[in-house]
Every structure is written in structure tokens, then in C-alpha cells.
Length: 189
Image (cartoon, rainbow, N blue to C red; front, side, top):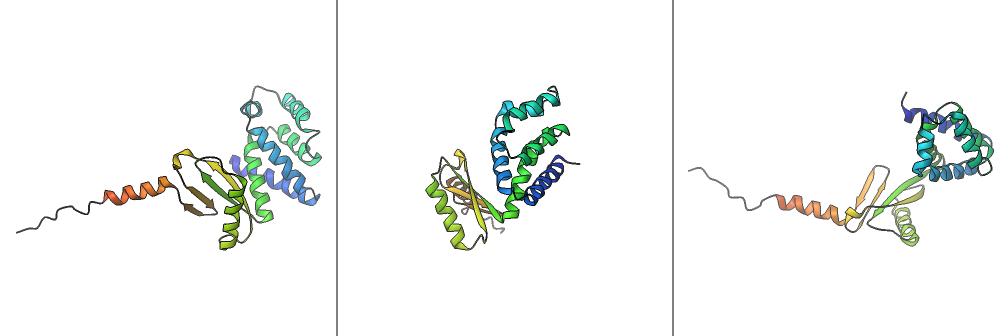
């Protein structure tokens, strides 16, 4: 069975438990915090290391998360470690966040620009999408930096892409100019 499928099953179980106990928002915040922890290469490597014993990983988790996470989330983390599935934490976290968004009817919109974008611009993009009717649910805008856009922006949501980047326009122009309109026509006599 694939890691993504196993991650989905674990995340769905956590989501169902959180809903059952009325702690969905708290668990979601725990998962977001844990996702930040996974960005640390050292922490991520520690979790994936087959050399570090399960008991050691469990005690590290206890010291890091027992006081900070809700009991549901903490026990869930410990269960994952006990089952030897800590290498799947990234898949589980991603899947949980996706399932949370589905449950809350939130559409993820990715705004990509050349450099940092302020919150005012992000809110403006959100407002434009809401007013356009393109998205009929709640919107969560995530920003990415991509210097090779040269300028402009891209907006991605669901299966749509709005590409208003300079690099896209240059590629389009390059393709159009690649067609030689002045190619001589040879006539047979």
C-alpha cells in the first residue's frame, strides 16, 4: 500500500476523532504547528532515521509536544511512533490539512510572485476571486516566491491557472515569433 494511501487513512482517523470530540480546530492548529516543525531538516531526519530507537523518538516527542499539543493530537503522534510509521508524518500532515479544507469547504489558492507579497495584496486577490464568482466557497491564499517569473504573478486553484507572469508572456511571444511569416513559397513551373 502506498505511503499516500496510508497517510490518508491515519489522517482521516484523526479528523474523525477530532470531529467526534469537538476538537477539530485545536487539532488543526496542532497539525499546523507540527508541520512547521517538520520543516527542520534535523527534526525530519530524526523521525526518518532507522538508527534511532522508537523509545528515544517517543521521549523526544513527549518533551516537545506533550504540553503544547491537545491530548488527542499528542496520543495520535505517539501511536504513529509506536506503529513505526513516523516516516509517514509528512504524508499524514499533508493529508490531514487537505481533509480539513474539504470538510470546511475551503479552496486553496496559490499566489506566486517574484518576491514577497504583503497581506494587503493577498487580501485583494482573495476579494477579487470571491467577487468574480470563480470560487463559491471559503478561500485560503498561500503565497510562493518564484524569481524566474521575472515579474507579474500566477494564481492556481482547483484545476485552473491564471498566468499573468512576464516569463509566460515572453514564452508566448517567442513561440509566435518562431513562426516565420516571411518564408518564401516555392512554386512549381
